[in-house]
Image 1 (spheres, rainbow, N blue to C red):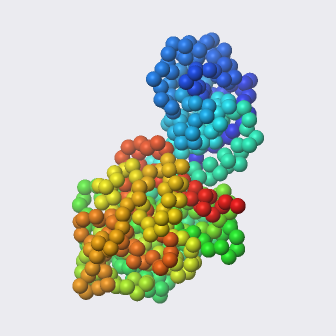
Image 2: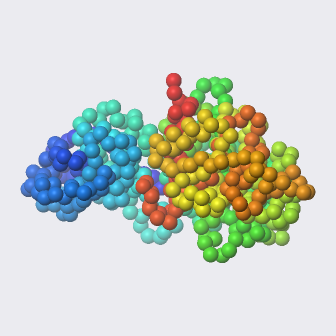
Image 3: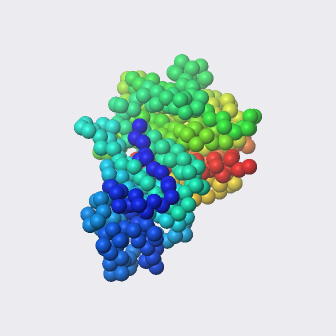
Length: 490
């Protein structure tokens, strides 16, 4: 997998600045005061930094903006990057500022002179998150990014936080890699294999094959993969780092490794993007990796349905009726509304098997959510105000956009079928809401539940705060924060 650049936080070493290679970043606030490291840079560069500041270079700069002095005399570094950031910036400001530096990170590495910056760990995490590119399918030598050293006035209290921040970045990168992979490489079998490989981190991983899924009565999940040569699977990841006997939080992900739409075939234009239709499962896997890496004191189980939606002589047809693990029957109106079928059976299995304290599902479920919220926010649907508020707070803390959407009986009524217990679509009006209403039918009474429609945020066509265009890893940070806030407070 793609690994984040190596990072470390150390106490300021003025004598090391002259020999630092790659790039040197100097953190300066609006008053223009040069910290000790910046003063040493200025001295070595024969006053160039002071002339830049005194000449008004900081005027009009916004928090997190960078201006560069290229090939400064007196230094081995190829550039000095002046980062505008106040000493007591917020966590989000510091992380976004770090991301601005992450864009510039190259093979030579970077030394950041942060002095008394109180958010050095967030600054470091921003650098790590943004310095990402997916190169697994490119030929030629891969150029590794250099190390990042952040110098601060007091480093002794930052190391544990830094280790946890790196664990989050690794989970985000794992998700991005999965979402970026082409479908001929990330088959259902390969996806399950990568999840199984996380056993070395301490996760307990179980992979259920088609015969077991059939025995469990998972007719909805299995119906999606009938047209594909790739076998349908369910992978289960358990992290039991909390108290014995405490009910776990269940995370459920849609893992459609490629979605043609099935018999309800999608238009050809843009279909190549459907390699990202396993984004929900990718986020669940990334969260579980993070929890294991940082040894979270929580019980969490992640379950993902892995399947490919293809047309063939065996494929499910519009008009077919399938039976869910719950026992309810579903009339298939549109085979391109397959994600909810995947989630329905996996959600029911999660509740029957683990009796979780709460359940959250994630899926690149509907194009309708993109029409409603664009690429700035995921849609949040819930039956529990407390759980929903806790997630929205966690997402806000981590700077991951999320917006709660309505639900109600009128939307549910759109799913009525004349020949089965329900239809799998409710028509064009409120398409993301009727999809959530479908899933709600598979939530047991009294189970706090959130459905996250991440179709607009899982992979995007332009840079975000923390990622280049493409896979974002959205949700790993927010869910990790939710676990810390909800399950790890003493």
